[in-house]
Image (tube, rainbow, N blue to C red; front, side, top):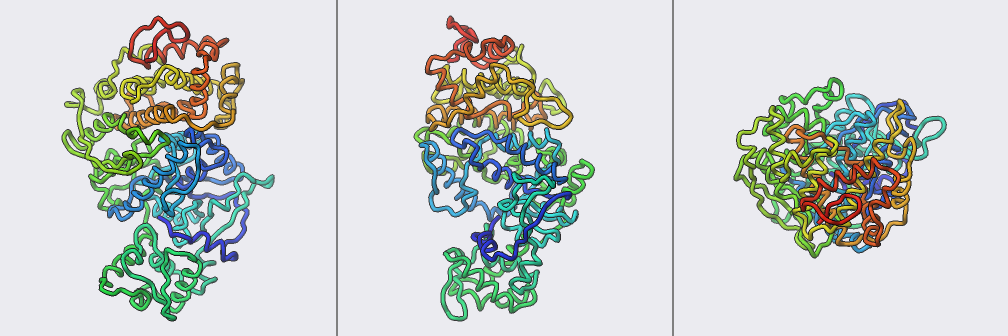
Length: 616
């Protein structure tokens, strides 16, 4: 959700938002919004699928140092009416443009879509990394079963604490303790007095400034237009008393908002304003009842309703099925707790509702088919386990530089025909059959690396163009780097972030030096193949979760560092060998050899060097 231009309008007003020193308080955090905000930081290399776990760690450490108790709510599904789908589709189109520009080393606006946040690219595994870091830091979080805004507002109202987000819809929700806009939340400047300089917004301040009744704020938002209702696009242009047309989607929005608020100030109640909307909009042959119905629905989205997540945060229990909206009745009871805990992918809600799914857009070669196609067979099994064999799911994905839709058939592997989810061996058999890996293939691989190695085996056989040996070697060396980082984290009493290690060691020092080199423009061929690997990993993780984790879930933050693997490909193609990078650390050499032996399907090779097998 979002109201175009509202944030800059409120900043322009100046006195509405007050300076504050935030500390010693609970805060409900809009998780999806915040992890976007932390990712789009100048220090994150977005062209190579930037690594941002350090940013997440530092952010929550700053909160902890100031006595702030964060409770994070992440978006799950969406509204049952699909009114927002057109916005999501346009964002996906904009992301295609953004990805194409990033692939060429460029930055800039995309095809005219105004939702800049929506047009930005988030790496395939970023959401998983975010949840993993929250878990490792002991930060309570929940995944909403529908759009998170209502749950966030409801919980903040119950706990009498503010909301932290950059979503300007929270200027409209009547939250007693107020709203902290992330753009004014100076967490990097946490003071020695242990507070965070910020700005605090309250609806009381807004309504006092414009002399309007607070119950008219949702009316203002609905008439101004958001992702759910837009009167101008419905054919209802605005007319003011001076008979001058003022289209709400054109600049200056400041003038439009001021005129609208002045008009609303003449009313005391919501219904009174709605009864007079016909004087504000010219309808011609359009049905005024349709406009009023759309406005009523838009207003309803800002009415704070009882939420479902308080008992999850207090007692760790699943949301009460009786409190869920009707459109979520398709969810089996057993899915409610893992969905809320974030251990099941939220897009399964769309699948069970038989709604279209928009695939992620990544930096890759747009002259080639989408990297998402590589892992489609994995998703087909995912769909089959949810819907049964033969059903179809509508997927939206990139075709060239355009967004198109296609029907994808759900399938079931032979091992799934009599699947019982409480039988571990059977669940593992389904997973391995889907990826084309035998159990013996994973012998000798550490259990927590079994899934990424199995996925790499699958990727080697399905990626197109087929990865050459330096690409596989770079990927496996990156995995070794992550494993060394994981093993050598400091084990002090407080949760540790990526940057805290006992002792670097020569291998870590050597590879960290590659990460710190200036980022180069991405090699399109390399970016495309690694995009396919990332999507294979994402869909492999989702399938493993649906099967109740037959393989241990890996820590994605340690599996893939885009900047590192891109630099490694360049080094390996220039003549550097894996042995030279891993020298003086026998355990690293052994891990690399086990991974390479398992991660490629071609059999023995006479090639020398670490691995002793041919990658392709």
